Length: 528
Image 1 (cartoon, rainbow, N blue to C red):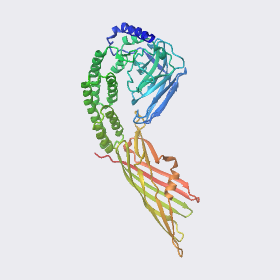
Image 2: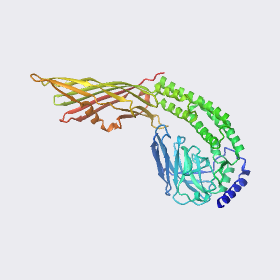
Image 3: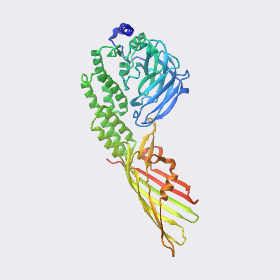
Image 4: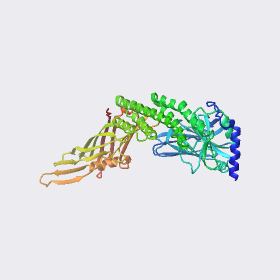
């Protein structure tokens, strides 16, 4: 009975205060909130496709943890999280629980991250409320706080829900969670139903989906209804799609730089459509979106492929990989996925030449082992180019003259750059950096030396060794990563990279000097 009473009071308050409960204030007004970051508390981390966590602590002891799941990013990004020291004009009557700004702004997570806020003091008030914003406070709008039962997604259940069954409990919660679909500002505070009503009457965010985030309400029995009513909500969704989202998608056809923003807006819109079971009602809008998305992805991936082929720019495969991710998200089972992967495969084709000479010499005597291999590496199902070829003994000889002759016959191995995690990879240092990381991981196998010594008046003496592999593994021990050896470089302009020259030394078991001269040449050989 108590919960139902609380719910009834709040609904009546909202309906009576927020312009009658049905009209939506004008979109596009400036935010009155100003957030001040504390750069002395900034935490920064490099997060890759495997995911990761960034933690920071504000001066007042409030802690923040940004959890980025696996597959949220294609490649490594340098992300910073800065706690907010103050918020002026915040429309939450019981104050700020905590807030951060995530930079660089605009990085989209394919799988949403989660921001966990643990305030330094217990909150007071009727309810806790999440919010998001840009810059120093622009686009401020309320956003749903997650709980353990809430799914994760760009809009987990809806981006702002008033949960009337948990108002008192939420207000005293020590741990607050928000869904983070992209890098911008996020936070939480404590407030009241009157605060919500004032927000609905305030100047609206210019982003249509930010505006929608504040338009929903959750009934006490868990049923969710748009604040404006279902018919008007469906009408508003269609209007927003045709007035805002579809034009942005169409603009991205000629300007791929707009694609991330357009796809994020459409994804948030589609989440509302699916949540409220309106897919069939808005099927025409969805069909129109798919036509444009197909065109965006096809034209953008074709432009990237042309730059790779004609300008020798293998780093264009990064963009094509991104188009595949979007195709899988919005166009499942589309033939575009295989078509783009075929373009990546043609783009990421390389000729790799491996040549290694290791000599061991004590005084005037010793051995020389020379091996070489030529591989064609091609990306077949990802952006990692793979292949293998024989590692051939091109020469093996005795150094010096002690009155005997030596016959050294080598048995070839396989230079493997095709097995699990092996191959040549090119990845961006970050979204904003012109530099790239080039990594080659390979397994040279175990070539064998068969040596026969012929001396006057003595029967030939034969022995078998794996000297080259023994010395090579010793001198490259720090490069051993799992199944193979890894060598990498960070450069600007992947098309100009030619490879690595490696010189190492060690000492043999009898004190002999051992020297290595290995060259790994990489030539980009894209094919139409």
